[in-house]
Length: 319
Ligand SMILES: [Fe+2]
Image (cartoon, rainbow, N blue to C red; front, top):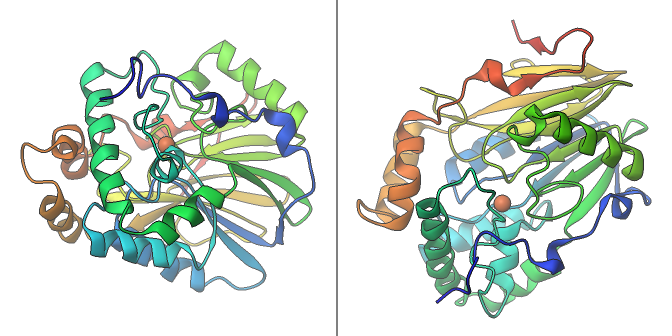
């Protein structure tokens, strides 16, 4: 059983605050890829690594949490884990809860009030099942526990704060498209930029993507999900790419000084992923109830809704 509020509350241990991002960068590169919400999709992972390996110049790929989720089959879990270990990573609420002995936080999602109770319950049940799989891999759980909650990358002289949730907490919703559509959300984000001293925040966790720019050429880029569709009627995941060079086919992008901040589609092969998902989460299962509709049809969200900008000008849709 979960404690009251499991999946709703944000555990104290998840909190760090924006000043935690004000320190020295851990990476210095020309091109940074950030992929959150892989959710155990091996085909999206394969596509992401393929795109990343084509990059020239100095580069890094950071998995910013929730790379596990639907991968309850032991072989799937270990395959995802082994691939992630080749790259940099921070932990999301999923990895943190898998590494924890007890599951009082439920899925640790910190769900806000606009997410319904049934979704929260399904997520708590998914994490319980996934924890049983993870228990077969004690070394992997120790590695997940040791991952940081955030990191700072320097991309050609510009600081990028990489988080799972927001600038305050691992499971915060401050960088969600919902909160960033409010004046309070914009104000809180501007204060976070000042305290963290970053040009870009790269986040994930809140399921839907957003690229919100701010005055003084700053931006929050939330990739939504790398391993699930992000827009109605589509079948691709998204990863964030921040680079001194543009890529060929971003879904949308923003230019900040000399940096290109892009949402890059991950075409993973919808049919193969659907079969892989159904083999682990058949009709009637918790994940099927919560996510199958999105995997097949995409969420009720359009690419145009992901592009947001400070008062002057507008982010650019790719041609
Ligand atoms: Fe998350």
